[in-house]
Amino acid sequence: MGYWESKDEAGNEVTWGDGVADLMEEAIDAIVAEFTEDVGRAPTRAELRNGLDFTIGAMEELEEI
Picture 1: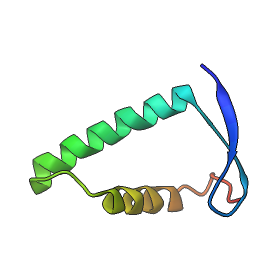
Picture 2 (picture 1 turned 180 degrees about the vertical axis):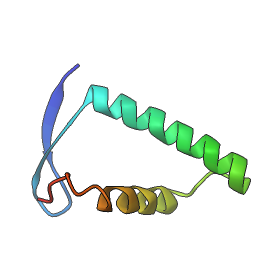
Picture 3 (picture 1 turned 60 degrees about the vertical axis):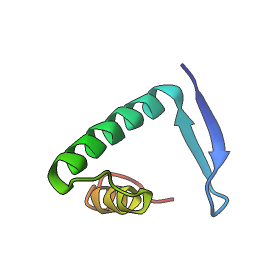
């Protein structure tokens, strides 16, 4: 599996890959299942984005561009 370069919305160079995309999909599936069990519905895309921003905001070891 490989990695590739692209640009984010601000035009910054970013890297992503097949393996990490698979891990992200597994994590999102688990989040959807947990949310559905607790709240009675799947989260919206906005809720998932907000949750990701909340979580990575607390991870000081991650570098900002």
